[in-house]
Amino acid sequence: MKKIVCSVSLTVAFMLVCSAGLAADYKLGYVSIQKAVSDSIAGKEAMEQFAGEVKRMEESLLKEKEEIEKLGEVIQKQSMMLTDEVRREKEKDFLRRKRDYERQVEDSKTEIQIKEAELTNDILEDLIPIVKKYGEDNKYSIIFEKNDRTLLYVSEALDLTDKIMAIYDKQYQKQQ
Image 1: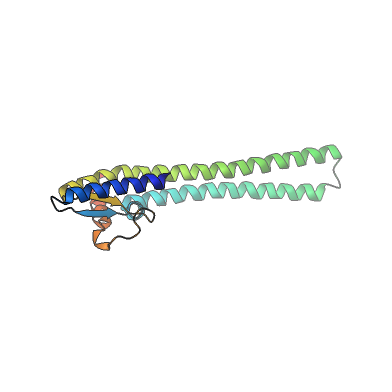
Image 2: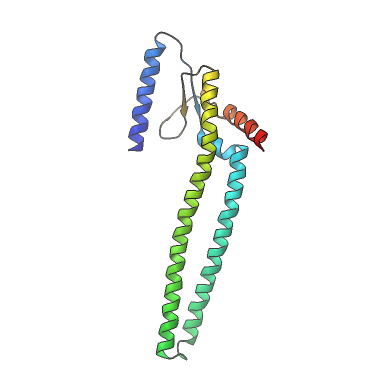
């Protein structure tokens, strides 16, 4: 669905530019938002912070996994010496902790995805007005977002990413 919407919007935009271009010249450019987000100063700082959070989460999950594995080994070693009731209770506890751990892993994955999207959106909120202002100031007809699915081939001469990143980095450093 998203591909269809992108394709239709690109086609309509191109048709508008072409019809407007009959009367006047038009200027096109593109920005790789993904590159701007990951290579900008703000993006690098955000990803560094994000990586720290992911590492802490992974360490916590690893610790829990090791404890569960130890509990499983203890139950296995002691199973012959335990009464049926005590063994069942320990196995029940083991299975509960294992199930809780698996839920925790899934919740952590979801939390990581949400956090990454939030970080990206925060940077995008700053980038988009910069792209718009740059387009207006430099009289661009259209500035596309470059991604592999919408723009299959584009000349590097139309790439505005580094210019936009330079403006964004300068603005970001002033805020710090």
